[in-house]
Image (tube, rainbow over the protein chains, first blue to last red):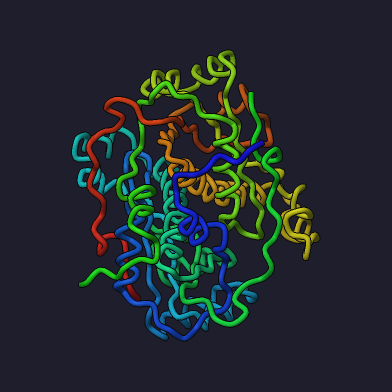
Length: 199
Length: 199
């Protein structure tokens, strides 16, 4: 089967996917608020259901907040999270419906028509904030930085420590320029026929 | 605040995010298996926890399968799903651990050490397959196509109709070249300070 050419240029394919890797070690170069803003201003356009945009990002900048975060990370993630230039906690805002009149101006009643009940909001926020978390990872790579996303942490402990009852942690991401020996060898992926079927 | 330049070139930024839109109407041009393979061979590199890669894609190609799908779509999604050149059902494989020895050759025991219990697998598959669903949407755009992702369907009905007990539907995506009046006006996004905070 011949490979169909993509519209996306080869350099962008390499930057975002083919050569991009999960970084475990970083250089000392800081990651600025301007860089995070540039990332956000790109990936905010990624689609969510009813444009609900439930992802919230908490940048952990103070040494004191970093210490409080580290307590809740799995042991294997602690050293690299302590050393990363910047760490972000990504969470789902279960009260995202409050912003829907701003986000869906042509149908502000969607706030109550679809999302009046908390369990419905929690399920929708989890799915859509996770989509946005993936866009954010892509955005970090688009900025020429390395991302080290992690789900190994005590979720309840982290939520109580740095967030609140309305924000469910999804992942913690180390962010920075990759340093020395930043990643493991690339692991295999599933073959096309293992992941895609036709009916 | 000045905007930091991204490493990703401007054309790629436009193709994937800035000018990309959720498509609701498509041209008649078919979407080939070669195009889907090119998309998969790009986005398969997107990161998942332990490289678990739980996303499964079911391409709905036969008219009979399309009819069976349509029964379970929300009424507002039915006409556009009937008309799209190609429809894909994205699901999370809750038995993804069976493939872990292939995907994590340096630590095949991860299959049992971390993912021996079904509820743990279901939670992990949901999160990681949703990340991969976002990569897949980006990949459709990278192929120069329009994506119309939808979560408005009867999940239990769709699962019974086209999948099985081990595969949880995440979303249905219409895929094709955008047609006439393919999208609504762009809705507002949250300002940076509404989505990003610093501690």
